[in-house]
Image 1 (cartoon, rainbow, N blue to C red):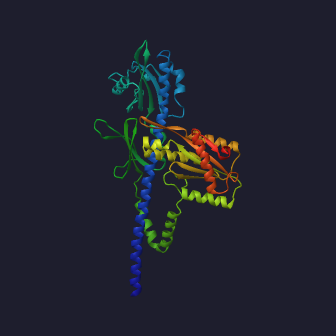
Image 2: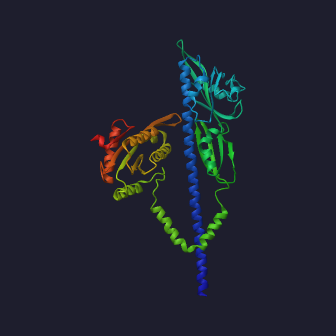
Image 3: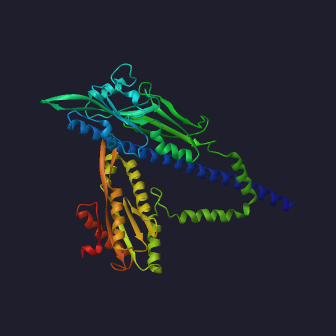
Length: 445
């Protein structure tokens, strides 16, 4: 009788533990999936917006050319290839419209139907936006998505070109760049979402009804909980919603896991210990994905102690004007800059190195095998080039770069603390000389 009572208690406690533990596991898994999805969308939205901003440089160049030529003898067929970067395959064309009427388009093939189109005519569906662009100097007006006369969907960016002629201001006309839709988004998050097995819906805010209208759907099922992210493309408001294809929960897997835990209750103590150790030994910086400070210092000290290699390089990096990014553009963009910077550091120093976030916008790269100085110079120069950029959010812009200080072991120092001190002095030297450079400690003595 006593044995039966004990067995019942064991079954009941095992069942309760397995159910609770399964619920916790799937809560963690689902929370991780939501975080992952949100991170993917935000990262790729930033990437897409950055690509569009870079593509708009073609309009700036075309505007400058037209102003310089006073609107005369502009041959878009000749200069068009210098305006559009071939890697931006989502760009359909770039065109000029003196007085609002399209006279030239590049590339011409596939866009022949647009020649002669009066952008200001009431028959043109986007004439209101075209008129607004023509009447507002130095304003980029985004339009779309809409159906092109030559077929297909697009988003267009138009701006007015004007210059002084005989002492008076002349409104010459419009220039425009056209992005294929939704291809402009395919180069960013759409491809990533499809690759990772997510269903998604992209909606555009109707400025009149203030409601979101779906423009792209893929494997979408309304009954599932989704992860929404709102974003803007220069005044056009979008919302992307996504969820795993089939939903967040695999009920067969949940039941199978619960039964597995139920029949494997003897291993619960080891699993609990394992999960506890994972938390204690966590080594990754949650924001950037680089090694965190505690684990990074521990690794470097152990490497120096074991003398696994003969020569090391301790590289200390700081993002120039990062405070301006946070203060002017917001901490969300600041976080994106940190993520992208960490990826740049890891991609350039991917082998035989420890890359960790020291704190804030400071990072350390510990090169395990100091290469010849020419090769190291080349990599550091490549890093500086990759970090030199402008961070843009609507009409605000902050230019960033990177300052670097380098100390060598054992030439400059033989301990972690001394290496850090020497590299910090070299970093200070880089900043004092105007930033956006690297300095070796040996060169300041």
